[in-house]
Image (cartoon, rainbow, N blue to C red; front, side):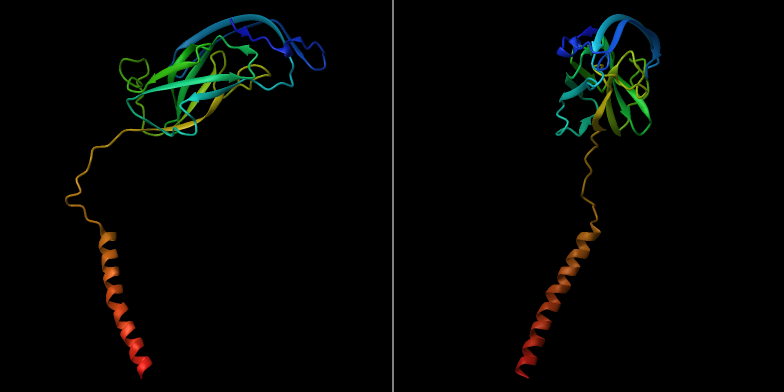
Amino acid sequence: MPSITPSSTDRIHSSSESSKVTSKEQSGSRTSSSGQSKSSSASFSVSIDPRLAPGGVTLLQPEPTLVDYVKSGDNVTFSWTYTSLIVTPSAINIEAYCTKNDYYYTIANNHSATDMNVIWDTSNTGSESTNDSTPLLMANYILYMYDSEKEVDKTIASAGYLAQFNSFKFGIYKPQANVSNENYNCVNCKSGALQSGRISIIGPFFAALAIALIHF
């Protein structure tokens, strides 16, 4: 059942500036990216000024401006906080969308919205021990967080309700084995050395020619 965060805006009663949701029954069923179907229902009453912004997510960890890549096999901790949120959903879905195969990898389904921390075990994603056997690719990803009652990329949040978060982009990589440089052939290095040799020969020639012309 969604919870209501007290706000001064809840006391706005002007019909021209607020919208009233009274004992609204929400129910339904959706299929997540992992193929699991879930249903839920909620009943509540709240007045919200429609001029207010939808609720949002601010990612705290990883630091969005510092982390660009995630090593495959590592555990990744996601921590966040909410902004402008009046109606808190009972649960949220957290997924990693791969731009290479157009697939949503489940990080957490029906995760309690009040628990603003989750650990993603990338080594377990796409393994036989999970319901989702799609392998985790070395590619670019987008982190998605949204109300579990909603469909990803299909719902526009109302004022005070949680809007979908999808602004954190990152890559997943797998370290490669070291390669011996014993027989490495650097063509550019050789051409550079030859070029340097030409300059060392031509330089003194023109210097001697200039001196001869001056004395002549």
